[in-house]
Length: 127
Image (cartoon, rainbow, N blue to C red; front, side, top):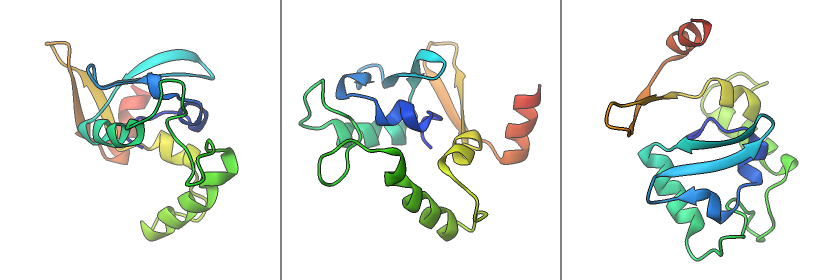
């Protein structure tokens, strides 16, 4: 949930989509292509995931090296949601839309990341 990406955007992302210099991830999905500024935790995660991979390799792969598919994360999300005390119907789609970070462009061209609770997030999105 570091990115707010759709699941398909992440599962189709290649190593070349992550730019460690600009700390961004470029994805293509349902609404076209976009480049996402990453929070520090996401930069750390994508550094680890991209290590020793060729630019054309999938960024997210299963333990057996195959790319992630839709059914690969369902059970993991259900277990994580249960452990976090979230409703039983929680899925990756709902988590994407209740992501705990908002990204605000700063005046120097960088991005600031800060936590936002659900009530504030809802109010921001309604504005």
